Length: 78
Image 1 (tube, helix red, strand yellow):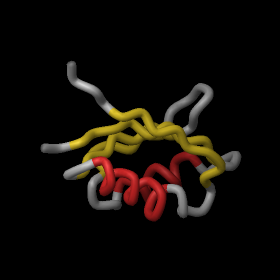
Image 2: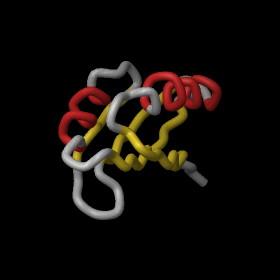
Image 3: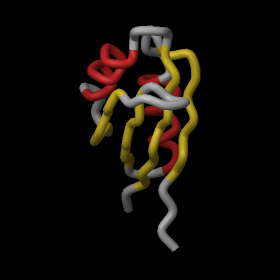
């Protein structure tokens, strides 16, 4: 089983492209793009389970320099 999520990220002014590039290098991240709108970067990530996904977000994504806020939206298939 694979758990997927979109992570919406707000960054410091002028840091979106740098943050997206750094996040794209993290194992488990399948897409990282800088965008315009209320969030600056949108990331798609996957892990083997919810615990691993949480660890990826908290320990690898949220710790990057330039990130001010994240919102994780798990993908649910019904």
